[in-house]
Image (tube, rainbow, N blue to C red):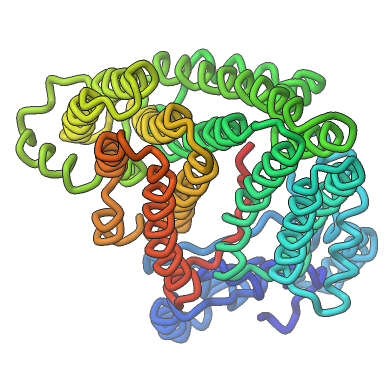
Length: 546
């Protein structure tokens, strides 16, 4: 840091204390992590040889570190000041600029995401940022707040499970409290720059655990009153997970694509210039803030069945709206997909040993096939077979074999097609809906709750894959995907179990539960090992899925 530095304390925080980047700098200050230490040593040696060069010493070092191939993060300061004045007049001007801007006000404002939903922006963030500051001043960490949010949501789910009106009212209130804490943890992380490996994992997974636990609580509460809504609960979880996979796949496929423009994107940019359309478009997709507020209010004043009906209708509309827009963008843009994007899509596809074997046999001869169309056809055939054929019908196994063949054919060639980002969500839909359909057709007690548990365990694996890729560490180890069978292996296994147990349908829930426990244990043990290891990325999710 240059001894003549003049600026805000928070500008220095942004440059010197952010653990997410190997090197970070503002004018007059530079900080490096262990990963950039070698580049810094080279820069110091070079700077010593050029001691007469102009400019502050930290700035010269930052330029040399960058020239050595290490990216240097330069945070946007906005109205914050970071300067190294050359003379007394410049020093007076910089000092006056520092005095003119309230450092703490900027820190509070930037603790809130710049892009968020209407409900979160106007109903939560205006006061949750002050809760974040209160937590920071008392030494609380984002991980502690995240855990408090999870515990609050689990208590809310327990209240909903009572099936009593007081329980539903308490559940609605506690769910809103949990969401306030959910906003607070991220704001605390940004306010105090407490980004951590554990925080990335907790923040990435707890939102889903909270929401899906609440679905289970509603289903249990309804069952106490003689209303079986487990199928609606499972359907809501499937819809939400598939919708998020669409978001993840599209973003991974296009975030580093070249010539990434389209008339549809241009129209969206023009609409963004009209303020009221921005908020309407954010609200109609039912993002997490609006969705949790709707769930909380409907839980308090209506019944679980009405909650799930509203959730399914609202989320289905949002999913159709966003997916249609992304399909149009993909068809009208002339983007070149990178190898990294194709690899990310292949990892998100979650192909197991059966699909891999077929892909290896077809490699080099699969370029003429339309991967996404093969995946779509296989998905439709699998869902149709699971829905329309009787429970335990051996023909469902034959349909599953066709699905396995389609799954292998779809990933035999690199996923660089305009619509290949649809392959992972298609596979998710095929697997999840097959499990739901077979559980419904079994028509025995416990089948749907067991299906809920199995889908939740597999969905956790898919979310874990996404956040590892986002952190830049790649997908989970290949042995994990092979051990749990891949999506096509699990589909074949579940259809085979249904056929074997057709005369003992009461054992089907036990089989589903056993598979769910196995998948959950394998995935959780490896996930926890990774996220608490030194190799996990120090990131904080800024792109919370809708």
